[in-house]
Image 1 (cartoon, rainbow, N blue to C red):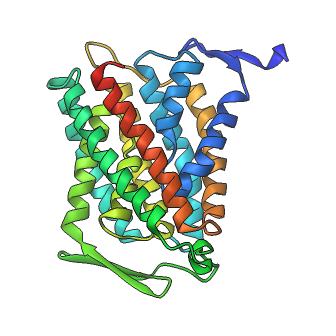
Image 2: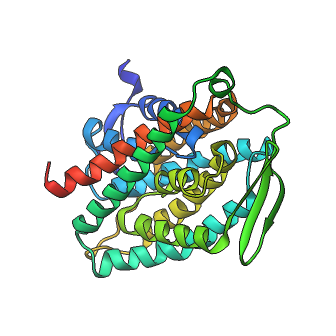
Length: 301
């Protein structure tokens, strides 16, 4: 098996050539059902298992998002389970947010531990709310088998200055346009500061605060992750921090992305067969992992 061993020249990582895409596939298959790429789980794998600890690891994580998320976005859009107004608002808020966040990162926040602790606490509250809703849901036969069919498509979408609405599975969902735009801007700023795509923050907010169905919004959140990550790769590759740029390991990132592309495509395809309760439990557990990681870093553990 030595012929499968490969040394990546940019990062210095040496591993089996098939390991990165296989790991990315396994992670993204499950996380994409909740509208999350899985990059937050891939980052510790790169650092702890592969030994990739330079600043370029963040850019490589962004490259995984850029390469992998189109698989999930395409599948959700193809099945008609894609809320374009939500996607437009997320993208419109995230792009300027990432620019602001990256400027704050290189100008005022060389080590923003306190703010990251705050973000971790907010995520922990959202995760507990998500888990509480899922655990308190009545486990009747209809509840546990709640899923989508081929005829369940997003319909009658509209976006206005005051409110945005759409129909899905016979119900009408509506929310304040400015609130989602503000959320996307805030998530973009956080993503620009910390080098995250933002799906792990936006998805639980849309489900718990905006009360939107996970079956309909997952694809829109993945598109937002794609856009913010594309900006992240560009900034890390072109704009220096402390006098040097920290571009991605292109080959490693593309290999991760290839696994993510297939994982997110299949995860989006399978999502409609999973119960919303199970997806919420999985999503809540993943957000707890992110929140605890942020908090432990603040206390130095």
